[in-house]
Length: 237
Image (cartoon, rainbow, N blue to C red; front, side, top):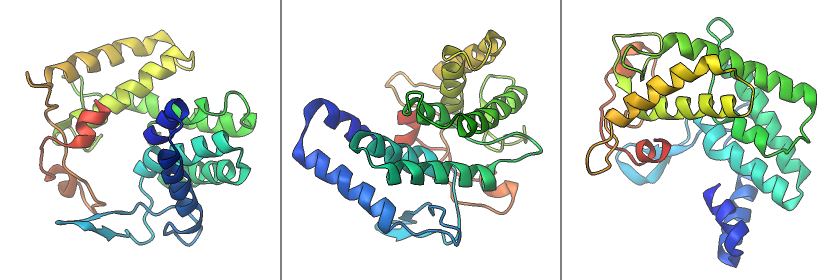
């Protein structure tokens, strides 16, 4: 996504070729679930050159790392099939990963809607925004006392985690700025910002970041993920 946006400024043929190649790979080659959902392919543990296919698994990360890019490329090159695929993936991830009991879901969805500049079907837009607002209501109630959110959101015995909290805060602030959320959410966001700033070391390192997290089958799996400086921790913060 960053490369795609940079290329709108620099118009570098090599950048463009890389972006087009990856968009084509997403449409034609990425491993998918039985219903066509993008599987979240990751590097294999201990092997930077190897890959883990995460068979039949959909991870919320995919929307942020893949679907935003595919939609942006579709908008840029007028490829309706790329835009349609991105919409399908958003709706499929909501179908399987949205918890109707708690309202919890994901971040980055406002960036996605922004890309359409008012052209997205209003019914689809309303459905996505309803999911977003339900999530934010739930997250406000689950915010930790110090201002961060716990790595297992509804378990206060799990450790507080900075990078996820930073992304949540950005999503809340953007919702306020766009007029989707009212100002009653500002204290939640401001409390989070203060907590995040307390967890940036003097050399700029973001502290209390969870290491890479694969799918676990119990809460202890997530509680026991190591805490370490990570590139995505810096990036999200």
